[in-house]
Amino acid sequence: MADDSNLDSMYFIDTERYNCPYCNRRHVVYRIKSVAYFDWSDEKKCQAIFVECQSCRKVSMHLAYAAITKSDSSGTGYVFITKAIDRLVFYSVPTSYHVIDSRIPAILRELLDEAQGCLKSNFLTGASACVRKIVYELARLQKAEGENYDERIKNLKQRLPSVDSTYFDTLLTIQQVTSDKVHEESYDGWESRHLRAITASLVEALQQIYVLPKVREERREAILKLKDEILGEKKEKT
View (cartoon, rainbow, N blue to C red):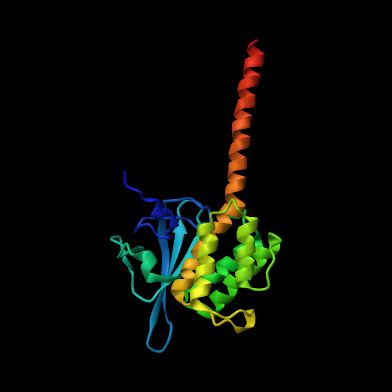
């Protein structure tokens, strides 16, 4: 059986369906509401594409340097001319859509959203600063200790044994291979590929820390409710 779970992590699945950043519905139909063009620089053009979810009717904006739309057959609207939309769009609003669950604390969601936005625009210094701030705030929320990035990650790994250690190990490994400096103020920053691995690890770690326990509790409560209903029905019959 084919595994298409990777589609859930995409913004645009194909030229007709996407994962809505507002109502969080997967594989929902969208339409291109409008398209605009502007000068990004003296020599570079940019296309702004406004996409409307056909479920919640909210509109997201997507920027691409390449012209990736054309008029549809009726001449009254637009369609994408390629399925590789995610690869060609370099910036979207909202930037991080459904991957940041509302059960994750707001301060972490905002920083992760900003980090992913900076990364998408290749603002690596800003993305690096946001990532390190996420680690600092996560350590504060979890009452972890440490004077620098490495120490805080190691302490979080000890304090959160239920979280897959792979994610913490990834955060540590990338730091160690990119910088041998100890003090926060002397840090140079990460490259794009490092930041992508770090943000992916942070997303998964935050999911395991804040989301999965609540999902399990919600499922447990649903099962207990069903059990109580069955027992109630049995008592009524007797």
